[in-house]
Every structure is written in structure tokens, then in C-alpha cells.
Length: 295
Image 1 (cartoon, rainbow, N blue to C red):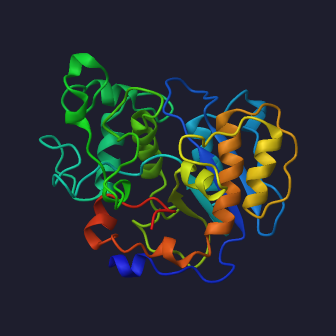
Image 2 (tube, rainbow, N blue to C red; image 1 turned 90 degrees about the vertical axis):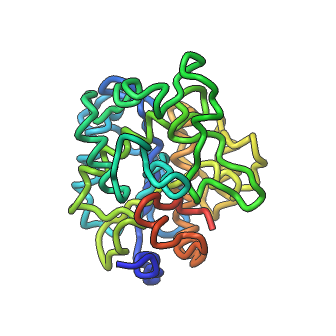
Image 3 (cartoon, rainbow, N blue to C red; image 1 turned 135 degrees about the vertical axis):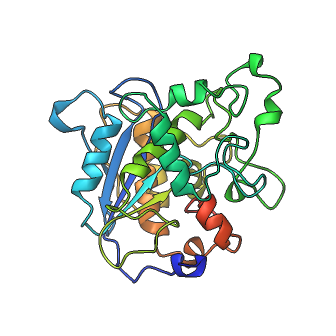
């Protein structure tokens, strides 16, 4: 399947339900950093989905099970983590270690070599610190670890704040991304993942999202992408064509990011340019993937 085939446009009204999942790579089995928000076609505000069985927080395994149970639904599901590591610039995901020819092979490799509970990947990174991952000053000069995927590099020469090789600081996405790759591996044959799989004619589809893109779409300027109160959330939702939300128990970054991004995903689904980015070549499609929302 060529990149052109994988990035064809979905049929009008192909998706009628939209979910945004704020993800976590934290250790353990329950993660307050995970939030799941859903909305249907129309303008009703997204709602947060409570963890199953009255749990205090979601586990990554519970998210996997929740997805699989809904694999036949016409639902577009966005995850806020990087679906692959850079490949194009250096010809390998983990140079000197992996011979993975595509992202799916990387997912399988990570899942086979990560022993953490609940699809975690913290020890996978720690075992490779200083070689592939930067976890602190003892690993050397941080800039030597900063490599980006094609979709993470902008035309003006700037890049995303962090890469999957940087595991230090609030902006880091390393632990969440490699934990997420384990989940993506477990979805194989059950729910397609864009753009690695062809767009299915029916059922659910998973895409990579970046919540800051949704924030920009509401008019928030760069550096101020977090919403922490009811009025600000309603203002953001209104900019996305959504009605006001039902009050949340707590206005955490995770909860508001998920709610806002679900509304953005519902609006963005019909933007043809987001399904057909110019720089998403066959090689990029197979090895690195793409963030839905980046043109």
C-alpha cells in the first residue's frame, strides 16, 4: 500500500464519534495523567469517560481494552504521544541496536524488550540511557540526543519542544511514547493506525495528535496552551464550534486537553489537507508516521 493509498480522504460522515486520549508513560498501574474524552457529531461538548469498575484512574491496559471493545464503532481516536521514533535522518530508529525497517517492527521490538507492568516502558529507556536516551547530565550533552521526525520539523527551521529520545523535563514525551508503542503493537489486526494502515471503510481508526495544535486552533498563542478553569474551557470549545461543557470534577491539564482536543478532532476530520500532507512520503509513512493536524 503506497502512501497515497493510505492518505485517501475519509468519506463524508465516515466518523460519527471522536475520542481524544491524554496519555501517560508513568510507572505503575493507575495513572492520573490519562484522560479520555468523547463527543459525537454535532455540537454537544465532549465529556470525560470515567475509568471502568469505579477505578480511581485509568490504567493503560484498561484503555487498550476500552478501545478494542469499540473497534467496530465509526470512531476516530486521537492519542497524544509520538507513534514512532525518527528514522529518515539517520536510517534507524535506535542506531546501532535496531534493524527495524518500519514503525510496526519498532513497536514489536519495544514490546518484546520492555518488562514494565501495564504496558510501561520506563526501564526500556533506562537500560539505554546515554546510548539512545537522555535522562540527565550524566548521559552527556543533551543536544546530541535531539533528533526529530519529519512531521516534527517545521518549515521555519523550528521543531517540537522535545523528542522521543529526551526523557527529562515537563515537555518530554519519551516514556509516554514508548509505552504507547506497546499499546499500538497490541492493537495490530484489531484497530488500524493511521497512516501505517489503510484508512478502513468502517470501524474505528487511531491517529496521533498533539494537543498544542488543538490549542492553537482555539486562538491561544504559543506557550499558553493549557486551560485550567471552566470559563477558559468554554471559550476554547466555542472557538471549535462546540457547546459549553458540563462541569468537570477538576480542571487538570489532562482533563481539559482531552475535552478540547476531542472537539478539535471532530472539526478537523473534514480538513482534506490533514489527511494528505505534502511531506508524508512512502518512507515517512512506513517508518515515522505523522501527527494528524500537521500539514
